[in-house]
Amino acid sequence: MRKQCLLAARFLWRELRELYGHVSCRLPDGSGFLLAMVRVPPAPLDPDEVLRFDLEVALLEVLGERAAMAIENARLVAELQERTEQLRQRTEELEMERERRERFMSMVVHDLRGPVTALRGYAQLLQRYDQLPPEKVKQALQTIEAETRRLERLLADLSDASAIASGRFTISREPMDLAELVQQVVHAQQLTTSKHRIIYEGPEHLRGWWDSTRLAQAVNNLVGNAIKFSPRGGDIRVRLRLVDTEAELCVTDQGIGLTQEEMAEIFQPFARAGRARGLPGAGLGLYITKGIVEAHGGRIWVESSGPDKGSTFCFTLPLTTEQQKKAKEHTDP
Image (cartoon, rainbow, N blue to C red):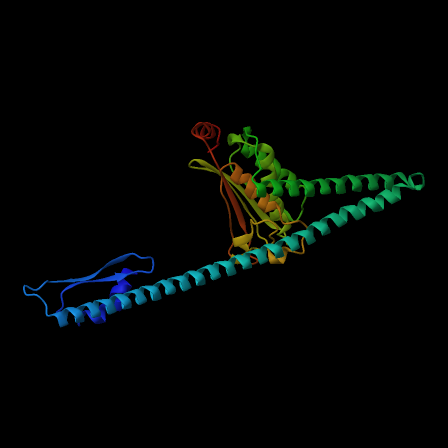
C-alpha cells in the first residue's frame, strides 16, 4: 500500500520539486509515512510562497488519503472476492458430500433389504417346519446364517466408519507376522473365486507390532475389492516387502481401473467409482482401510492408468527401530 500511495502522489512531486519541507501520506487507519523530504533553502520563503506551499502540501495529503482509501477499498473487494470463491468451493464440497451420503443411504438400504427379505422369507418358510424336507430346512438355516453374517458386517462397517469420523477409532497392537496373515487372506479369498488367480509375492515371514485383527480386515478389503472390481477375472498380485523402515503391501488387479477424479476421492466415505455403483457394498471399505492404516501411522494410496487398465492399492506400516531389527532378522531374502 505504501508503494501504491507513492505512485498515486508521484505526479505532484514535480510541482513540489522546488518547494521546501516534507510531504506525507496518511492512511485510513490514521497511520502515515513520509513521501518526500526536500532541502531547506538558506533564505526565508516569501509569505505567498509559504501559503502556496501549505496549500499544495494539504492538497497532496488529501490526494494521498484518497489514494490510500481507494487502495484499501480495492483490498477489501479482493478479499470479498476471495471469501466468495472460498464459500462457492465449500458449497460445492457440501453438495458433493450430500450426494455421497444420499448414494450411501441408497446402498445401505439396498444392502439391508436383501438380507431382511431373505430372513423374513425363510422365517415364514420355517413356520411350516414339519412339512418341509430336511434338505429344505438345512438350506433355510444356512441362508439365515449367511444373511445374518452379512448384516453383522454391514453394522460393523457403519460402527467403524462412525468411530473414524469422530476420532474415536483405536487399535490394539500385538506381536504378529504380517506375511503369514497376508498369505492366510490370499488363501481364503482364493476359495471365493474361480475366475481369478491370486498370487502372493513376498517373504514367508515379516514380524512386527501391529493390530492383527484390523490388518486382516484391511487386507481382506483390498483383496476383496480386487476380486469384486475385476468382473472379467484375471491375475491379482499381492506384494509384501520391507522398504527401509516400513512394511509395504500392494494389491494389483486387472479390473475396471480408475479415473483421476475417482482416485482423488476414492478413500472418502460413501465414495464409489462411477462404473462400480451397480455392485454391492456401501462404499465404506476403503475409508475404513485408510483409517486402519493411518491409526498405525502408515500411508495409503492408489495408482491406475485409467478405466479398464486395472488398479494398484498400496499401504505402508512403519516399524520402530527394534521392529526393524527383528523384521530384518525374520524376513526372508
